[in-house]
Image (cartoon, rainbow, N blue to C red; front, top):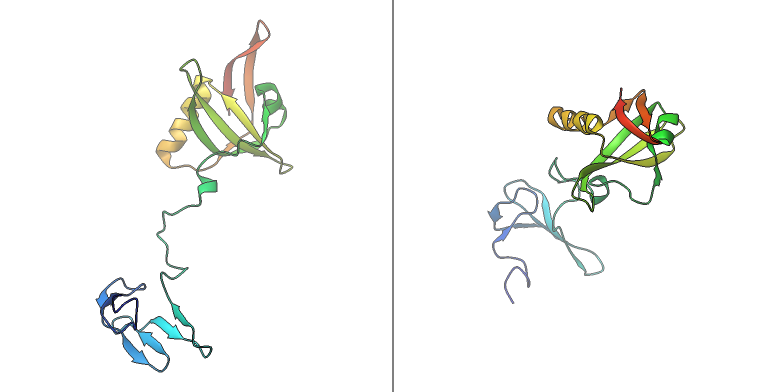
Length: 161
């Protein structure tokens, strides 16, 4: 057993300032001599509480896993249904590849009534807007209008504005 695991008087890394230090004892606590933060504290019950990493210290670019992809459990709508729900906001999108090797985007949206839905599209004009938003660092896109032409019962030339 090392000193860090046992009594706690040896050299260790401070979870606050991340320096290798030899902590100082103040009352029932071990204090970092560099940043003067509590590293370890003995409670009245006799239990020792160690600070592993403070909860409020996170990197600015850390996000939850929920924010990284679209919610696949949402209602999937067609372009006609999406056009009927304008105006809406594109909250996030994810690039995917179809079984035929064609790229498309799964787009998570929310409309004015707060209803969330998923719109899958491979329309090149829509994908171009999503790529432009990514280049500019835009997280959300407001869609005021969806236009498309119907050819042989299928929507073609889909555009968002």
